Image (cartoon, rainbow, N blue to C red; front, side, top):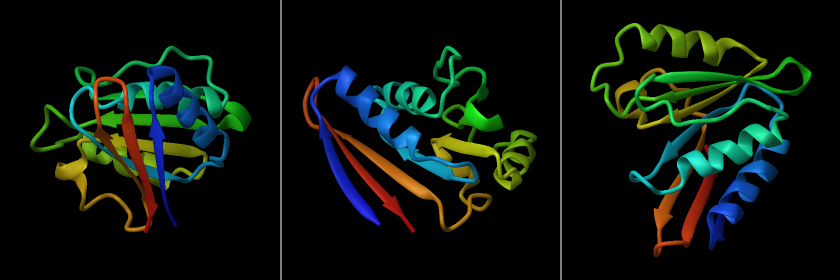
Length: 141
């Protein structure tokens, strides 16, 4: 599966994430690829709402990981390895989340943990077209 979507505002990025989140059932691993400011957090906010979370979503750049609750006992495990060239103990936390069938695992800056991520993950590549416009390429291996 490969799909390309264009959004022209933060609100459209949020809505794309929400529609995507509504389709998730648990057990998915999603890798985000995109520069700083590309729209990963806006997409994640929509994804979380689509999964039924009322939690406040923020980028885990400084905390490394956040967990949000969703519908039907689903949880969203949001990891950000931007500041970690070596994941250390967080690698074990990531492995546990990947093995949980009720978890939706979202990973930003995943280069240091590619060996942990399953090959059948969903990759979302976000490219900045201009100040407001983003291109999302969604691909499932």
